[in-house]
Amino acid sequence: MDPSHLKAHQALIAFSPTERLNFRIMDSRIFTLALFLHMASRSIASFAGPYDIVPLELGKCTTSTCQSPKFIFNNYKLRKLDRSSYVYSGVLNSSIPLSDEIKLAADISTWGNGGWKPNFYYLELGGLCSGMEKYLPKFKKEIFAQMNQSCPAPEGVYNFENLSFVQESQLMSTLPYGKYKIVMKGTDSDGNCLVCVIFVCDCIPKGKKKS
Image 1 (cartoon, rainbow, N blue to C red):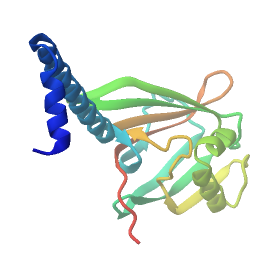
Image 2: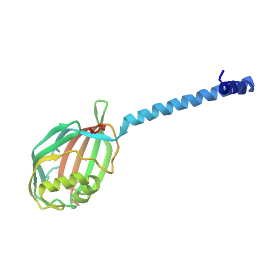
Image 3: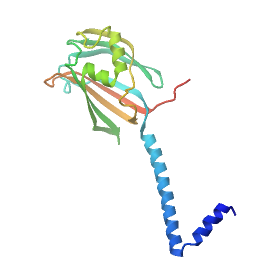
């Protein structure tokens, strides 16, 4: 017998029968706890983490949600480049300037049990310019580069061609995986809707980058 195993066996014999029973119970509980923590960590890792966004739908809100929008999107389409890369092309017709006077908020629903579960998360981004700079600075930079403008920008008609649709957020490096519907609405100081879009996507584990 291995000397270390022999010493452990002799030490166990030194306990009374009741003490040996308690020792074995404690040992089994430690093993059960360790197994539970291992399985829990694997479950958590599969539930949330670094992610890729897969766009599924992009559309306008209903008139009941936004009665008189000042930003109209036309001829828009999404095109897939690879597993996690998509580009957007379309026309934005804005009858008012793009500025921090427009307050952005995202109402997020999650898919489950065959239907949408509302009020999963509500995020107030703040003003259009400062909110995009805070949450999606790369996306903002690319948008206004294609517009040949900075933010704030004047009203007008803007064409987008192969705009990178999905951009990582430095403030949200990990997210729970699943299917989401985001209603992004911009309002004025009186709460009147100025712009509203619906975006449906899958949030999936981030794929490995090819070297």
